Image 1 (cartoon, rainbow, N blue to C red):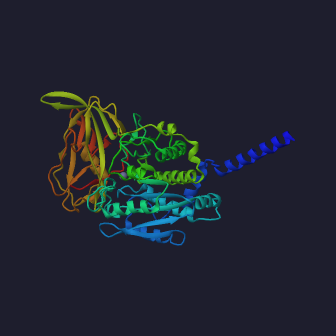
Image 2: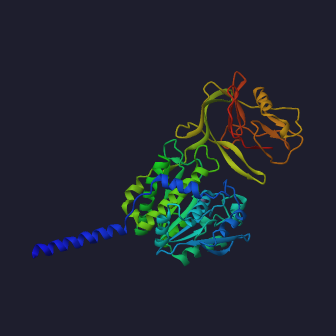
Image 3: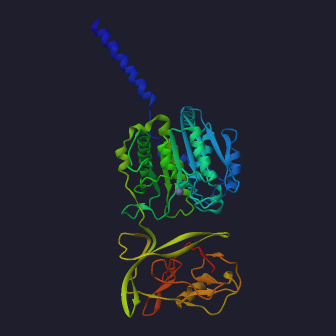
Length: 489
Ligand SMILES: [Zn+2]
């Protein structure tokens, strides 16, 4: 009798433990399954990262049947800011993107995700129903539409919205804070892009994705709210290491009392920052968009099943820190002459994107020089034995940019000409020639000191061997194709 009672007792616990484990059953989603979902559901209307507010409106509207759309308010310049709600679960998750207007990678992934959430009879219904029954999702895909239209970081008041969480000067900041306060999400995703020059610290690997559970105080303490964000990130990182091994960084967690991520964490929402960086050969960030789709879907799955509880804050801290050590071009041991003496310098060059009504172009300059051994170049040149040489301006003007062939440009470079003139052409016209084109000026800027525009030759006995044209390295003996984005001066 006693043993029968014991058996029953044990059976009871067996059933109870089985039931409990079924409640929290979390199985990692296979990479292939996430990848296939992206390929099936990526939004074909978005093909590059410079889409505008107007481009998104029909895409938002097409989801009106499955999502609850709400206009939350308007930007400084009167553009609508819309939220999209989906799901009827008890765990609330809010995802907001493009608070910085030129940080659009995750926005693209959100539209891919909307298509996915709307699908059916495709092998993903189990996952979709799980998300729908466990989660209530609120998306705000474009917080800063004025910045997005100008493809710049700040809003139309020139305020950085990520420094306006407390002062609430900008209508966009008021909208975001109110959305959080009204919804009171348990989890939040703060979606950004970081500069392509971020790396995994002290490695040449680009930080394609950086993650952060923002601090909620200067002491960077960990409470349950922040701890959950860290655990979720640890799970996201596990997936990322399969996709982009060694290319994930942990963003700096210094507390910024004016930032949204930090404050939303403080207000009780477990907040996860995703920063999309660069990936070689992906200037339009379409591969990084796919990675965003996969890690966001994976994270939602983790939250829906509480699968993040399998991970620890130690695993979060084990993610290596971000560095800022990448350069477009590093030239080592270039000889420069100062007061009759030659000095060997390493110079580090970045080509930064500049926005233009006609598109965008690069503006290269010297970031730093001297001993550059702690930096890593996307391209590196050993210039031992080569000397800095200024170029000349070709005296005969061409009619227009299209009258200059690439062959002609290379021929002129070999003769020591760094720039040509044109009679006609639009101001700031973007072109892809490997030579400077002048329209409204007779001169161009050049130098090797920090901040200088990088337009010069590396020469041997006065003969150009390499041209550095707006920071692009042109090997005059072994021509290679560059994706050049120059502009007319
Ligand atoms: Zn940002």
